[in-house]
Length: 377
Image 1: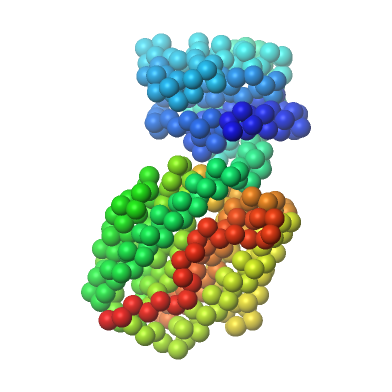
Image 2: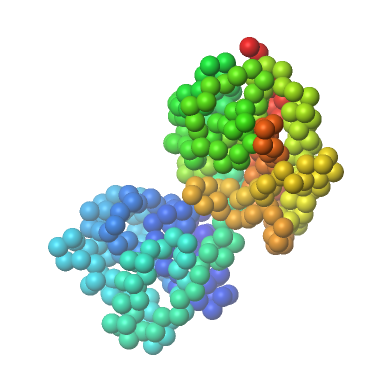
């Protein structure tokens, strides 16, 4: 699997006339090499040459044992000590990759820190190599958007785990329990169900708070008649799930029921529209048209969905399901579908699922009941 990804990367670099891509610890490095680093202020860079061959990893000496155990002989290692600093090793690695007087390289614009960029630029100057630096994000996003069978299996298990946790969490809703208390319960249930961790800090929003799509958990106690939005996710083998369900504590108002049925219809319309070749804009429109037709268009405040995989927090990975997202989606593309309506003084509803495009259309990793659940008092 890793060999295939490195081959695809080499081909992509050549297609875009790039000499190399330089990656820092994070989701892209995990994707390419299946290796994770302890977050650190110490310089760590992986250099992948368009000429192919083994990547070159400049890393702190204290990380060498653990990384070598994960990678074996897949990479060349350039370990540096705190006493000596990384300059010598970085120059050696860069010199092996950038052999001409000019090099066009890609770096992660949204991830690489100034510290790493300056070190790379300084190495180029010392070696007499003029670096033309471009953004690696589109190249890497294109590779990662389509998930292989192993990735999809991990995402399916992450969905199973979070659904088990969500079921157990909802069972503990009752009047007087606070959002914060239920949030702690949700975290515990996700870990107990077998997750490596939460995909993100879960969101519990009740009553008037449910009208805020990004509500911060509070000490508000649940009351009969509340709509309660639960948004949570689990990580399994590095891959994330992300699900939202909205339940009612006792019988909701007729308007709340109508809002719920509208959002459910939008979720269903979007999922039914998914097939190979569709765009994010088209799926967004399928959901948005349903909500607008019901008179709630001004209260659908966010995009219909986002990409899902190794990354979800603090940044979602591509693609986006929003106006202007016009790249056709291929089989294996994974993302969320999460329409919502949010009305101050009334409340909010969101119903979110994780899906993958198949040859036949759309498969949903999440299967939790989408009908309105009434929690009895």
